[in-house]
Length: 196
Image (cartoon, rainbow, N blue to C red; front, side, top):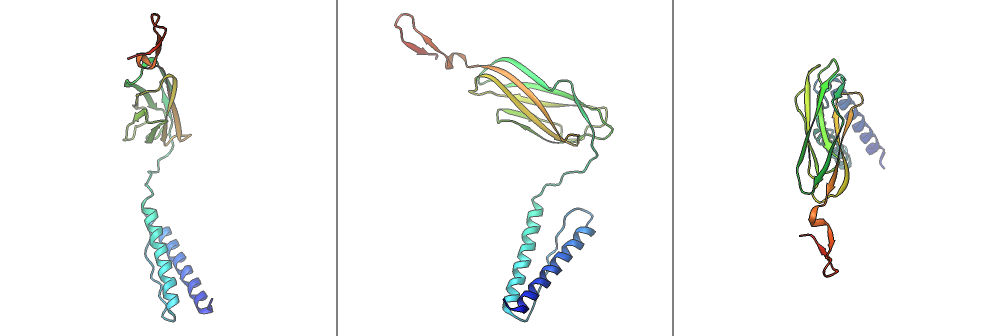
């Protein structure tokens, strides 16, 4: 590789790194990228290399745009009345709601940033606004077993500004397959008949 090309590339990378570092250190609102134009009139290969460096900076800026902002809040604590609920015996294809009640037992506002069920059959709904210290809130969970049967245990994982950051709630149910899933012996004919 031509020494001028190597030198030009090293200078371009150093300038880009320096500019990005200065922008990151002086930015008040998080990550910010500025396009840096690096031009060298000595050779067309230097211009191509500069274009590649500028395109890389553009891709980095686009990647940074897809990172969701998470508010920085001081940690607090959460306490649930119950962390597990047993629905008992339920039927297939039913909708089974339950509400987990909690209290912010810390000294800072509680912000739940996410709640995910362990499968699509378990759908949680959680408060999006901060819960102040001493206040209560609810996590509403709907379990719809569909064609699942027998003993089932599902989880809901909450992410919040707590220590630890995740809390796991559990639901259980014994799902009765019903007449549709059961086979019965016809005593008159000796054949097996499926439920209708």
